[in-house]
Image (cartoon, rainbow, N blue to C red; front, side, top):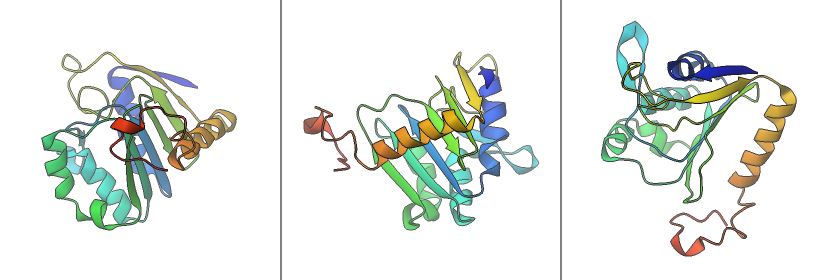
Length: 173
């Protein structure tokens, strides 16, 4: 396991691992906001553009989040039709989602405090970002448990016992 702190989360996960995913990417977060990352030639691009590019390359992407994204995120999302049109991109809204997990190809996983926001996982400057801590692991045992938990959630395994059904905008089951 590797400890990642503050801007190290962005460097290790968002720059060093997410763009290299080849088969699938699973993301769970409580909050989703406008988020930019450094792209080709040093130009900053919306993260949803990175997701759209991955989907266009045949990567399956699952995104679970707790509340509706902000208007800037939604506006950027609309610029990448592959996210709305492809069966490779799936999204679930769960009001009880609070974990922050990213899993890539079953080969690595990030678990930490950072949300899918500019100040959390984005390319904000060191003095403008949240204070974050997490771990990146390539341990197959830890990754396997995380994948099993995430997939169980994704398939609706927690919906029946949730007790928040009355406020759930997007029940899985």
